[in-house]
Amino acid sequence: MADTRKTASEDGVNASLTPFEMAYCNPMVLIGRMQSEALRATLDRQVEMVDFLRLRVEKDVRLAERLLQARQPVDVVAACTEFCSDALEDYAREGFRAANLVPEVAAEAAERAARDAEEVSDELKAASLVVA
Image (tube, rainbow, N blue to C red; front, side):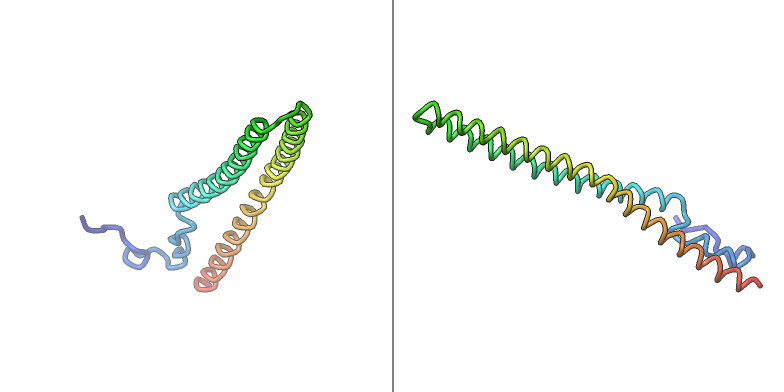
C-alpha cells in the first residue's frame, strides 16, 4: 500500500510548521522512546539485583560448606556470625545503592528532557525566522 500522506509543501501548509513533523514532536514516537528508555532502565536495575542475589547465594553456599567442615561448636558460631555480619553489610550497601538510583534515573530523564526542549526551541526559533 502506497504512502498517501502529504508533506507540508504538497498540501500548501506553511513551511514553518515543518519542525512539528520531526520525530521528537511526534507523540507516538515520543511515547515509544520514553517506554524504551524506561525498559532499559528497568533492565539495568534488574541486572544489578540479579548480580546481588548471585553474590548472596554464593555466600550461602560458602556458609553451608563451612558448617559441614566445622569440627567444634565455636567454628559453627564463628561461621554463622561472620555470615550474618556480611549479610547485614551487603543488604545495607545494596539498599543504599537502590535508594540512590532513583535520583540518578530522574536526573538523567530531566537532562534528556532539557536537551529535547532546547532542540525544539531552537527549531521553532529558526522556523519563525523563515516566516518573518
